[in-house]
Length: 226
Image (cartoon, rainbow, N blue to C red; front, side):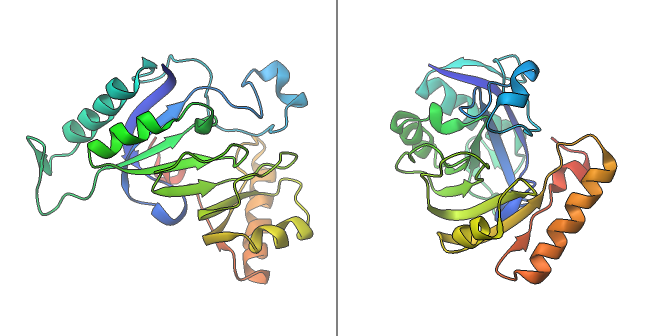
């Protein structure tokens, strides 16, 4: 059984797929922080802006591979007027699901991937890159976290949250990895607005002086959507 925090239909807000209609399936749990505020200071990753603890979110709960894939498919169908009775109109795109967390690779297995593919989903994952990748995932976004060991060194996009403690040497290492897209995104977990503004300025400057990297903005936050 998979522990799911929440499942919802929205637009992807970040990276190369920004603006694409997506079902987000958020898995509970992470290997870099347990999500408890009292343990944040001693965690490897201290800045997560997402609640990934428990199964009490929208559509959260315990699911098997078949029931989870079916729920995600039904949510796509019911949320998308372009799809009628399971058939796509000329204005409907390929079903798209984003498996995220927490750290989804702590739970995802080939059984779930196969079930989602049976429903014709294109499957994306957002991962911290510390766990081996499950075969069959169609779009891989790796977001490395300072202080953790990166074992996933290739994929479709790498997205570095900035600043985070990485040195120029670290960023040079990331620049040489086998990814199609290289994104750097301002850290936006901090409550202090002055620090957030500084993070944005530093990130913009990095892109201007290291032109392999592109700016990623959390557009869903600016738009006020999930």
